[in-house]
Length: 165
Figure 1 (cartoon, rainbow, N blue to C red):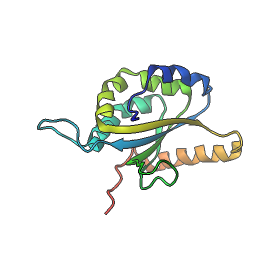
Figure 2: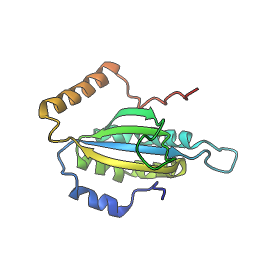
Figure 3: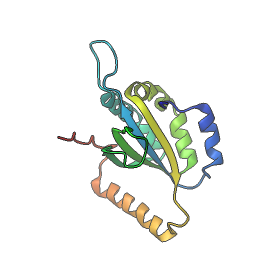
Figure 4: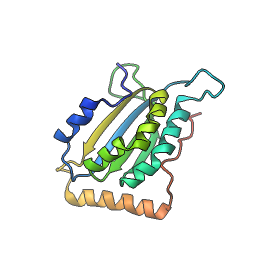
């Protein structure tokens, strides 16, 4: 069954699974619609999602969130036969509260129509650092992310991956 909208019950349940004060990494699995709209201003699902990303970038940055990674889905090695994802994204938030502020922000809410129009199906998986990963290893990951962000000096959310031949 396709999932393209956050439900109030999922948002309400989230604090019971994710303690505030820990960084969250949100995994996005995205399957785009081929086309959106029926008029002269038709766009692809990917274009509609790009519009959503551009509209929500200021909110993401304001709450302290950042993109970590973006790539094309190629093949589902373990999963239902025929399942496919067009794109995978990772975003980091400094805390549960920051994620909640992002979701609740009026500018994010206004952009959700582009999210909904863009997607045929999606998944959002909220993760926290494993306690077995080790504090030093996690600190190095966080330091690496900060270093790359400062070094690039870019405020771009993510670049659109090139299409495969």
